Amino acid sequence: MKMMIIDGHADTPQRFVDEGWNFSDPLNGGMINLDSARAGNLAAEFFAIWVEPKEWHGRYAQRTLQLLDGVYNQLRLHPTTMRLGLSAADIVQAHADGIFCALLGIEGGHSIENNLDNLRLFYRLGVRYMTLTWSNSNEWADSSGDLDDANVMHHNGLTTFGREVVREMNRLGMMVDVSHVSDATLAQVLETTSAPIIASHSSARALTDTARNLTDDQLRAIAANDGIVMVNFYPPFIDEAWTKEWLKKIPERDAFRQAAAAPYRERGEPVPYTVITAADRAFYAEHLSATLPLPPLGTLIDHIDHVARVAGIDHVGLGSDFDGVQFLPEGLNSAADLPKIADALVQRGYTTEQLEKLLGGNLLRVFTAVQNAATS
Image (cartoon, rainbow, N blue to C red; front, side):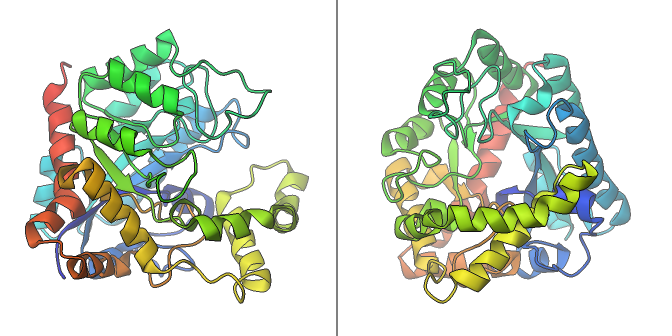
């Protein structure tokens, strides 16, 4: 089925910067490029500006600017096939013109270095959402990723400054993204925000019990806020049995990672995430692929369907996590395979109108509402 698709989250900017890779090059192990986007009817992609918190400690804003520049360089290299989007209207116009629309979102509030001036600067540079935390809690918001780490200072959600960040994002017209945050942080964001919020890449906790996913009550709360939940494709977030087997292999997997990282450590350089991804894939191919096949596409469809039924068809979308994860469900190899999701949903009885909302219309609505509520 051929429909316009908008995806909420891809970590491709690291490839631009760390590999010197071009968005019109062959995928070379990646999940999205211009050709695959065109083949998969992907009209627009939110590129995640993700700063690894340990590798780039003390240089978060610097790395953020480096990754933003990487996207801008791709725009310079592809002036007739790729365009920066700053609004929902820009997405629609680019699609009408047959041009891929690149959008920008920061993944992890540590990028602003506790400074609202940096937040405003990033907005002026085109950033249109910010995920308040990554897997690390920062000085003003708790993450779901380290709540059991006694060495990390937590805040029981948002600090006073954290609430100021949310209000400033509302004022600017920047979408507040709650993927990765703790349950307490999410609840307090909903208390604070004056605009709809998003979860750019989160799945359903009722189906896969991980803190990275959202409970049914949270799905309903985001719907009541008129927000949107964009479902993550990553196997550990959509298939609980697969996850348990994958986690059992952490010690062996980490040995592969350390070996791959060693040359960078010896040179005192940050280890590119693509190196870690390649190590995980090598480990899986050698030790697990025969006994732990990737989850079938149906597991992802189950999560999309669950969010649609619990939150409502107006509050669900796609947040692939392309190039930010090692693996995708069976049958999804790149953005070119996105129409398989629409076809599978048709088999479950979804109408054309419902699919148009789910594949992009809902995100356009929320994006417009957030910018209309801005006071800047």
